[in-house]
Image 1 (cartoon, rainbow, N blue to C red):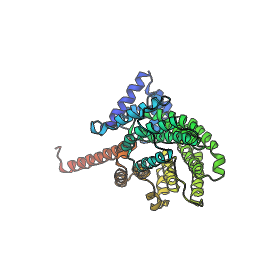
Image 2 (spheres, one colour):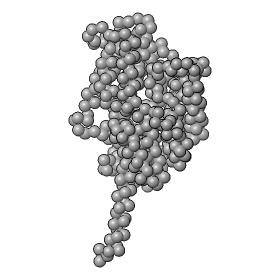
Image 3 (cartoon, helix red, strand yellow):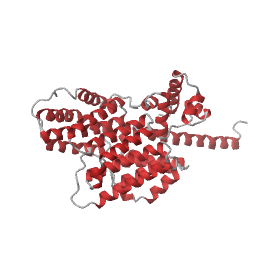
Image 4 (cartoon, rainbow, N blue to C red):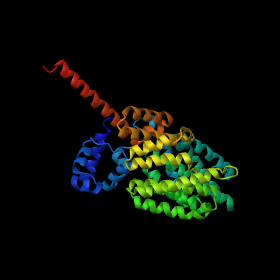
Length: 409
């Protein structure tokens, strides 16, 4: 892992040379100096923001995973999830063919119950387990759509779309860009057939995430707004699922705006999301099942506000927001979101010069969502930075002590 930064730099250099691009050209495209590019290519600079990593990959016309060498796992045991991923890809490729399914598919109500298991696995950031569950559920949902009509058929397509969302999330976390792209396409297809008024917006929410990989910040904001408009009437009426989607899309747009350098807009989007979360918590009546699996809540808005501040390199603002956020609000979030939150705080403390607190937050992140954090490029970058800094500090202490002992004399 300690050699990863050097290898990332070498990959960036090879990609640049393939394009016949000079360091000065790349620096101008990134808004950096030639010296920065030189240091990055030698592994002396960490790509410690997702937006920066994606922008670099976009300028070099490669996928971010190609730069960082993801997926990271090399042992056969840790790579078994790719068998499940291949099975999911097979199902998604044959989406418009007669499904291969033995027996009679269960009714939609029972298949929705199966998705609750996926919700729990997603909340625990158990992405490998999600991959293992999905192939059979894709087959059965598609089989139900084939043999049913009317509302039951529409619900089968809605279940298929939600399965695409779970595949999309797990594939992002584990590093499988082909599955990410295909899951997004099939989600849009099945959402249109589902008759669920919110599902197409959820598919667009997924597409926004994919646009980040190619640093298409303006397009991702435009798509967020298109999806927001599609659920605006339901949001105005206070439909709970539309409120969740509307707020989640505002958070997507906030991150996009922050990465585009549009600070005022990013903060405005967070305010809009905060208003949606308040509206959701003030709603009367029994809770509505979150069938779209959008983890939207006041706590999620707060941790996004911290992420947005970090994307704008405002670590002190991020730490200030964290101080104003109740511990209970964060602890009410699923482990997957808490893991991301503690990763962000580790970065904030590191940038603020406190390596001890940074390491503690990174340890919290790992213990909360180990699979997510160990496979996350920013967590790995943060850990490398801490290790390098500790080594440099130790070397300096030893040098000074060596001088006092006159070991060189």
